[in-house]
View 1 (tube, rainbow, N blue to C red):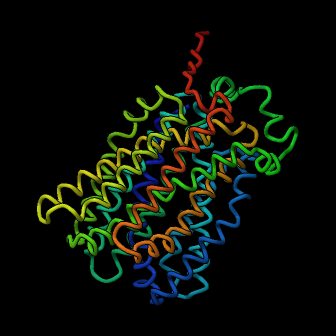
View 2 (tube, rainbow, N blue to C red):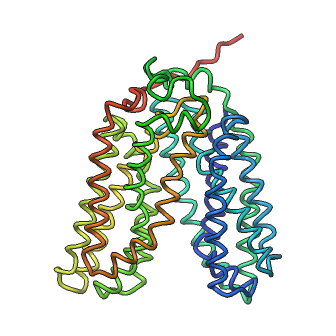
View 3 (cartoon, rainbow, N blue to C red):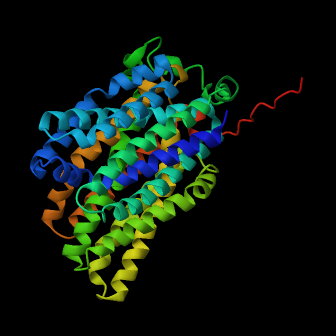
Length: 419
């Protein structure tokens, strides 16, 4: 198995995503001539359509294998982005954006499921952390490149962004093909063999999504992630508005905070995950939730500081604390979702788990804007309360989840025997 090929493929994919993601609204508004209202409505409709088809992705992962679904999502998005410059009418716009959203929705559970096929135990957590770090770094690079491309005259910059994003998926496809899950039988068996009572606890001989819905501990884990998912969207939605309106700081400071977050996640993701693997995944993830709540409390206290350099310095310190919480929570939480899922139904389990992210991201804009409208501190109390509740539920779930999911274990790779 060429694991380096997999990581390289995901890095290329992330750079392409970073090129396009910040400019999705502006792209169609500029290239297609559609109004921002029409573009926003179309992107929302495409997202909900992909969300409705998410369970199908889980079934396909279990039947065809995670790598095939991941590759299919790359092919679909490569074709869709190549057609973006042709979407000058609303029906064509809906078609290509729906294809893109469907590919993204399928990729979300397929990526950790594929990592589960090529690594096991604590090694799986490390690869999950490395993938997250690589994606953050790649998206940061893509965002910088996009800024340069938009300096081109007319729509050339936007067209270049779409075509380069399509090319990134096309280049990543052969790299993922090289990352064969050859060690799956030897590696994942030890990590996935939980207590024999697991089958009974998750619904006996139930199959398909019936087994997922019958697995109450896993559903509780998914609900817990829904609460903590709001902490992740806070940086993009609540923080820029808060810095400008409540603290009177320049809007450009939000870009600096994003840069700090991206650099720290990319640089420290793997080292922090190694430290987290010394503890139970539930407690490490819960510690991340408590750290999220602490960072939100610190944001709420910022208005009491003097304005000027002191305020700006404090914002960067709090943003660093927030990033530390993200680093503490992300890898153990994702490890729990992967290790708590049985091998033969991992696609369905992870698709159900990913819905907690998708629903939170759909609800967050309305909820966060409502809380911001109430005053300067209500948003942080709401986010902090959700994070603390999620952290407490993680600790309470510890005894109900499979032991292999809670306790990281080292699994030795098979040593090739010379002929």
